[in-house]
Length: 142
Image: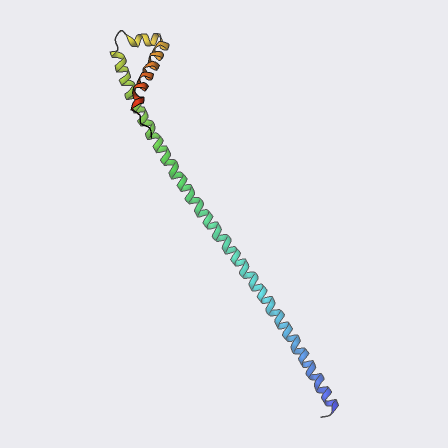
């Protein structure tokens, strides 16, 4: 082979290599673009799935919390009604016993207590102090 033929062959081979490199570069760019598109789609889908999952769980937790607070409110209302009824019953029994004792008191104590309430309050206060003095020694220290 002479030099001219060798140069032509080298030029043709060089042109073919350039063409192959351009094709390879184009294919690589296309693959990178596809990869970017796939990553974008997967990221968007993951984001949408995450938002949906969080939304569903927040909704479920909200419903459970509302149910829990509703149950607690119903329990408190029921307990308050029962306590009110028990206190009313206890007070009515206490008032009946006090009225019975007041009716048994000698010398028309109830009539005098209604005419002079400050005297009745003073006597009751001293009675409470006496009762406290009697009960106080029975208490034990912890």
